[in-house]
Image (cartoon, rainbow, N blue to C red; front, side, top):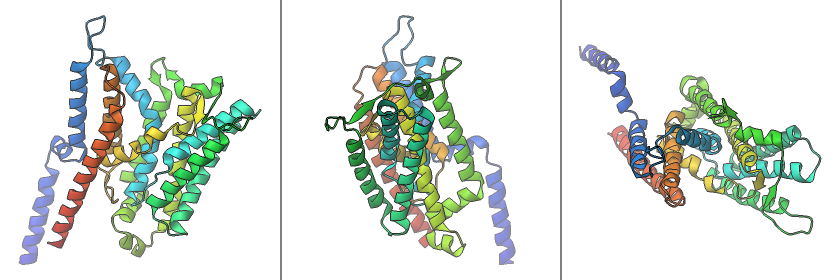
Length: 353
């Protein structure tokens, strides 16, 4: 009788959850508070931004929306790769440096050699993939902590790029300027003259990777790896193989960021993506991906990225210092990590109970 009553209670619970409206389900997600924050940020800057000649707020217009979307492309690719690694219980602090390396290689090929632009792009992608392989070897074969291994790789790549960016006189110049119409179109081409093509590709990648994470065996494997490594091992999951893929994937996606950035500024530099070192991590954790792994999704990560970029664009439109954007990113990262810590502790208490 007790078993029957328990089964009925379970059925009633499942039925009651199924009857919850889609709106209530959305409110209960981790991304909902972030959506509210985005609305607040938009409202605040819509009020604070100066009036245009037509009497409308400078921030609250379509060109501002396209600008925000265009600025999402470079950090967006970084966020996807790093976000997947965090879900699996790992991390990559060298992604921004790998992206910068691709940009430097393309710039050097275009400015100082006769290498064609398609070959230059392939070389940049291969170099980034090699960085991912080395990261995976350090973590899986040499058993180094991902945080330390990838941070060390970032330092090494910074030094390598400084050496590459050396002119004929032996002087370190830190960046290499170039000019190529085809490469420039990669980052600046706009569909119908308005929609940034690179950003549309980034959004497409978010959708594909997001669906793979939430709807496929691949995604379930990553959640299991991040949530319970022992269970993943017992389930026969080849964690090492997935780790290699994720590190290489992170570096290659970062190279997309580096290529788009280099095409826009016509330059490859050792510090090209330095300001984005933690943007992807911040967006991922802010969007609900647990720093300890095993939970979260790329939809929330995209929303987190949108909050950060909207704030940055709003600061520029209102005439405030652009350096406030990194300040906000840091504050949001601390807040997200703190919330994640208390959330994990509460879950552990419930499990222990």
